[in-house]
Image (cartoon, rainbow, N blue to C red; front, side, top):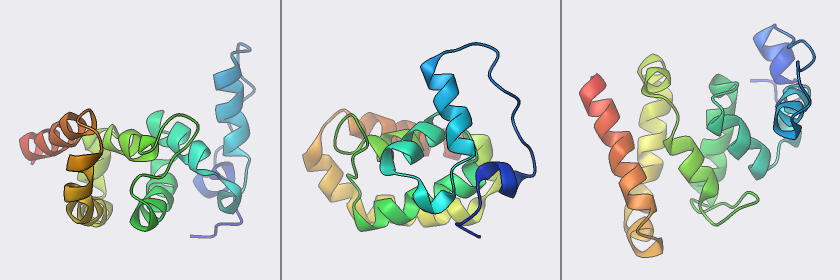
Length: 135
């Protein structure tokens, strides 16, 4: 993957200008035009949470989470992990390679997460249950 390219370039599609001026929608559009190597943790959190560019965003997020499973965007420690945990099961079915790599990250941090915050445990359980049901 060429991290100097943008999502627009990598996906071969340019989004038209937003139909309305929501600051969040405007930001999604701007992030699609930002080179991947310049995306922050918060940018990854936002894109993953909105299911945007997942083939490119999830591997980047996984790299960050491998280094720091509780990486923080703008909200709280672990918000990037929470965002990736909400990625739709169809993506994981289509990308079992990334699923295995993300599951490895989860396995490594399970004990840490258990002591971190009880609110993250149910999300992990929902993620795993969705994938078991889908398999």
